[in-house]
Length: 328
Image (cartoon, rainbow, N blue to C red; front, side, top):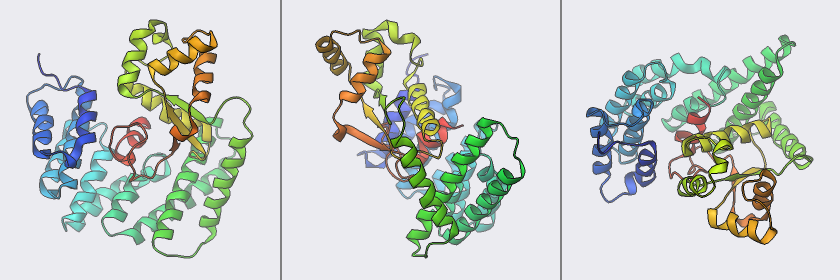
């Protein structure tokens, strides 16, 4: 089948977005590929529709954006929490408050179980319901902290996930309260303490840098072509590579990711570094030393704000790119 819509092309379209001279053509390309069965990976059907919906939403076409978000939910009913949240936010912005609130309220329990689910309160805040968003964030923090007090025998993984959720919820709540001009309260102080604790812990790490080496899309493909020996060291696709980096950053922080970052590598840069050092470019130590050698000015701090451009270079907002997709 010709003209397959690949994950890479979806990313490219998302990066162009409404700033393209012809955003309608981008939407038509995405939706046409879905309608004609030309999406290379069926798992990306919902994603293609959501990128199209996001372009329309940013262009102000909320009705058509809602229609595509609804299609995304229907196309992939087993993996639709993010699509449902987007649909709920669109319903709110279209004045269909009862429907939108019903959609988002049904997803509210995810705030207590999924570290990425703060997209729910993002949708509330962006739709003029910041007070309710703060209420949900506070309730989720209450529930998780109570759970950690009463369930003392949870696994280490469960404890780490709870810590990540507490940090993420407290940080978003802190930032939202700051935007509202509200004074610090107990949870705001907790967010500050956790941020400081994460910084101190990371400064004391002896087993590796706090900056991870990331290969942009074109460089990732060129890397594996030039040094096939690295195939076993990296995921098979760039999309999996950036998801792996995102998860590693979350794991490294233990508290949601403070004072961490990514630095972009280039194939030519690695080759020159290995040549000058007389080392093997496929050796893990060489890769670590190459990452350390890169200019600090090129480090992208992690995590970006949810409404900031994603660190991976896709051009899409972080909350609609690596944040939800890598933690699914």
